[in-house]
Amino acid sequence: MDNKQMADLLFSHITATPEEYEEKYPKRQIEEGTVVTRFAPSPTGFLHFGGLFAAFVEKTAARTTNGVFYLRIEDTDKKREVENGVSLIVKGLSDFGIEIDEGMLSETKEKGAYGPYIQSKRTEIYQCYVKSLVEKGLAYPCFMTEEELSEIREKQEANKELPGVYGKYAKYRDITVEEAKAKIESGCEYVVRLKSPGKPENRIKFKDVIKGEIEMPENILDVVLLKKDGTPTYHFAHAVDDHLMRTTHVIRGDEWISSVPIHLQLFYLCGFKPPKYAHISPIMKEENGGKRKLSKRKDPEAAVSYYSEVGYPKGAIWEYLMTLANSNYEDWRIANPDADIEDFKFAFSKMSKAGALFDLVKLTDVSKNYISTLNAEEVYDLVVDWAKENNEKLYNLLADDEEYAKSIFAIERGNAKPRKDISAWSDVENYVAYFYTELWDRNLDFADNLSNDDMIEILEKYKEVYDANGTAEDWFPTVRDMAVDLGYAKAPKEYKKNPDAYKGHVGDVAGVIRVAVTGRRNTPDLYEILQVLGEDEVMKRFDEAIEKLRG
Ligand code: GLU
Image (cartoon, rainbow, N blue to C red; front, side, top):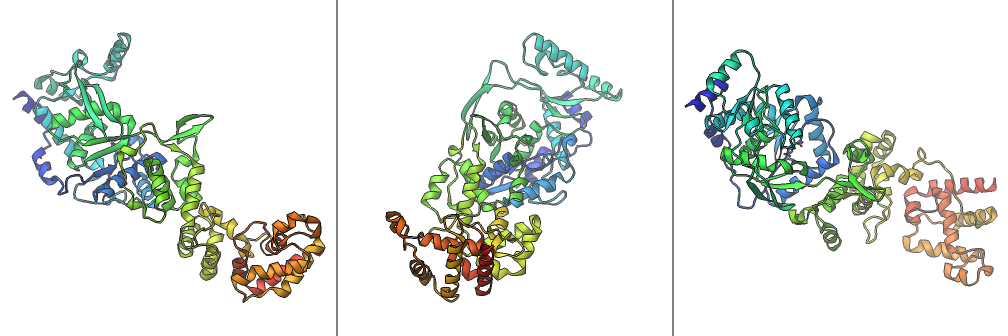
């Protein structure tokens, strides 16, 4: 009776019952084994790489079973919130192609039948469940002041006891309705605490999907469920939300492992079926021979905006995230180079218990490989998208002549061994520079093993034999024949055998042509480059080079 009166005293404004919410948010009609996950960030600023990784794992786990992945915004801590915090997260996810099935779409919009998906709009739901706990004698108002709380903390520290409000330290555990009423009427503030039935000698066990069997002491703390302003703590909101939103797998950072005893107790006392837990270890980084957590403060690559700015395509980021997520992914990729990443069978059991190691060099490598598998159209579209926001000059050049740009990206692409010159879109300006007068610095990096006169001779001769309509097959033999005519060996091997007999070899001759048209000693296929540049431009470049060599 007293409990009922207490509940009415504290929550006179709450008329709904848990049963009504159970009905409003029914069990999902999904097959056994279907996974429902959520990404549940606080809107506190930019998306961290660790957050992106968690969201990727959550999305992947749901997708693999045709399940549901939703975005819930945990904004119960108003002090840490930033303006447009929700939009920053939504954009962060969509920039990397992590689409949600349900949840927040912007600061105010959402989709899905299990909302609201932002905690500040769920206050009444939490209060309804706290009310029912009070009714069952499982929660109570606690009027302890800050001073009283620090006092017990000091005492507990001195006695080397567990800190917190419990047992004899729980001053208001047995408060009567009359006392509570008097306190409230006199203006005292209060929180609502759990009346934990836990016992110090009890232990609980649970099986973490990533970390395996874990055993811990049962929770004995009278943890706060509702703060003074009536909003829930993380613990309580987690229990209510993940129950009502019918999450099957709570995938989150392993800083929450120590709170699992509280969470399991809350699920039990509220009459909820607990979810499966999958605690992800933080992403680590190697430094000075040791390992440390990837840090928001120290590492620019900790902010996901870094990857958009450098221009790693999201397909490459996915590849990399999957290598971090499942240790067997790389082998699978080698065995299935053309398969869709979505065909890979993600498994929690293949996740690192110790924390995946972040490695920017590796990401760059993965990205290079990924980009080498794209066709010219795909590269063009992605570069243009990136350049639009990050490199206006490049964007204008590429957009001005789409066909020309695509013919550049088509060079040595689509064959069995595509080149891997581009690891991120910010490499493209340099990669395409000699195809655009606006970008090319015209610095001709000739090798120093031939004299200027020899090089002039090569270019003049090549101008005569160069055939703009020649085929790829004819190209090299033409250069070779010309080389031989001019006194160069027709192959490096031959030259090495008898260096005194030649001025150099065919490679040196091709090198002069290459530098004259591109400025560089190393480029993709020269024949293709000449084709893209076209006869007029090529001839102009030869003339300019000859002039420069003449000094
Ligand atoms: N809002 C919590 C955080 O950002 C979420 C943890 C969870 O996924 O449950 O740490």
